[in-house]
Length: 114
Length: 113
Figure 1 (cartoon, chains in turn yellow, brown):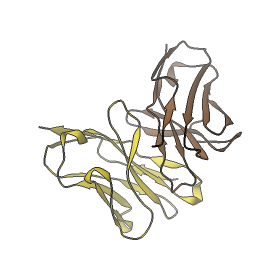
Figure 2 (cartoon, one colour; figure 1 turned 90 degrees about the vertical axis):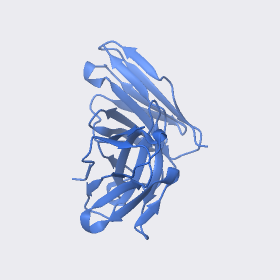
Figure 3 (cartoon, chains in turn green, yellow; figure 1 turned 60 degrees about the vertical axis):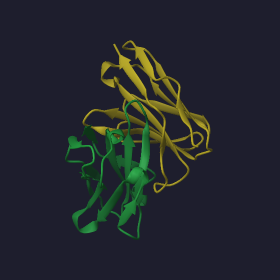
């Protein structure tokens, strides 16, 4: 069965420090990979997505993610975190073979220390 | 800008009541989705619809039904609300296939007493 794992439930980083949020997936098909962010009291917003080509993708708000097929991972990174990045981050995976739906990870809550 | 609106931000209902959650999108999207969000479980798909009057079960459809009579509107129905349906409900829409971005509404926090 398809599954998405975000191993870290909570992460705390200092403002200005670098960030990496982990995402691992198990899929029997070529995946489409997404990162969404949910700020407090709001719906989810797309940060970036990967389908094919360059395995390093750039997103909004200075985020990037790298697809590593050999590790079944799609980790999200940011070189310098801002206090406004405090939010919950969700990795999601889909594949045409499984229809027009995504499977989401459990989420990682990011806290930023000033 | 794509706009997905949900009828209520907060809703309190009693066990056994019939509950309607409404979602409207203004971008002529083909696909619409209902998710349930619970701490530590992420988002779980309840139902989705790929066309008017068409629907497919997601991963947790039990206790829920849906209706899509018009392209822009997708309703989630709890026929007889139970306390274990207390949750955050998120609606989303997308233009087409699985590779398309899903656009989310702000959510409805439902409490069933």
